[in-house]
Image (tube, rainbow, N blue to C red):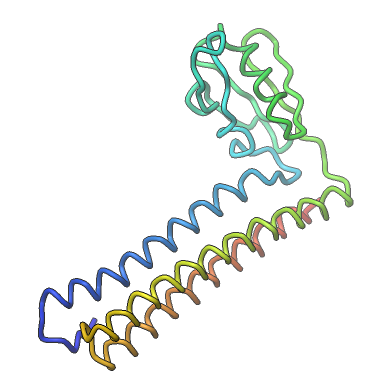
Length: 199
C-alpha cells in the first residue's frame, strides 16, 4: 500500500481506518454465514441445531447444543445427537422442540435422532424469502460500516490530517472493500438458494 503522507503516525491512522472497516465487514459476513446456516434446507446438517440453547441440569445452566453433544448425520435426511452426559438427553430433546424450528427429536435413551422432512415447494419459497431478508439486513450493516468509514476519512481531510490524494485513495479502498463484501454476500445467496431449490 502506498501512503502519500510523510508522518508514520498518520500512516498508522489511515491504515487503521481501512483495517477496522475490513474487520467490521468480515464480522458482518460471519454473522450472515451463521444466520444462513439456521435456514434449513431439505438436507440434514449439524448447523441446523448446533447453536440451539438448551436449559440443562434442571435449568441451572444454559448451553449451546454443540457444547453438550456430538452432532452427526447418518444420512442426508437424519441428524444423530449423542450427548456427552446421558442424563441431559430429555432436556436436549425438550430444548430442540422449544426452539420451534420445525424439527421433531426422537430419543432411544442413548441418542436423539431427528428426521429432516423434505421441503414442500411453498416452504422452499418461504425459506428463500427469509434468506433474502437476512441477506438484506447484512447489506444494510455493510452500507452502515462504509458510511461510518467515509465519514471518518472526510473528517480527517477537513481537519487537515490527510491530503486530497489520501482522501481519494482511502475512499476508493473503502468502496472496493464494500464491493468485495457485497459480492461475497451475493455468492452466499446463490449457494443457499441453490441448496433450497434442490429436491
